[in-house]
Length: 313
Picture 1: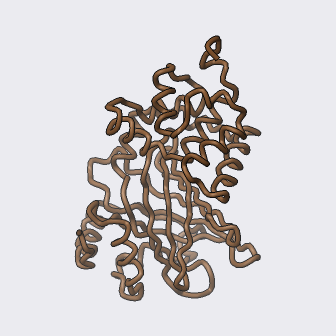
Picture 2 (picture 1 turned 90 degrees about the horizontal axis):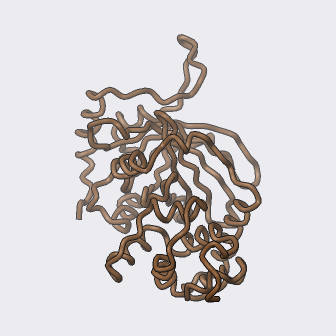
């Protein structure tokens, strides 16, 4: 082993990608700082994950310690390495399979979009700092039932060029969990989410406005949601979506409590207007779309939202 270097590690980028699923980048960065008084940035981790750069031996040893493995374990073949990292971090067999499938799919052939290369780390940091946090997401049901759906969205970590997103939707007393990613393209934010449960296989795509270069603090995101699964029959469909940002002091647990107790029929009319799916044929308006909101309307929304009295503790 003494004659081997970092460059001799096979599938190094895939191993890093897998490791960052087992322990999310934000936790690794915090552990490096809090436990070892060292620095590991999201830019550095992403460079390793994409194969654009490789760590020094000291940095690899630091990461390995946080992963509860030896740094020489990176020389194991990918499957053995993955099993070891999962075992030492008590990852369930179900999650192991999910993580390995995601990495293997990328190893076979990953999607490459040139748009990602046009956004540098500083831009992504600005975007993440502006939009991170928890949101209530509102949309009318895309079935024939005139019901407003509410979900809790958490924009929670940056791993360039993507931003991590989770969503919890409460339906018939059961929570459905979604995991996914967010990325920016010009004036839009694109969010792609998939369910965790095997018996409810669904992918949801959401497009909202991109507030990265606005001077105002972000209180709302608005746009269009695409979805299409009900039982075993697929219905391509779309609906307007409105995301209301919660106070930073509102914990995940308290947010879920508020959502469970919410009476959607009593939502402010201004909110309902933004998610109304009714289409007219006036002026050629055949396409479902999200309208631009001016500053005055946003201020009115803030006043309406404050009357909902979210618990800030």
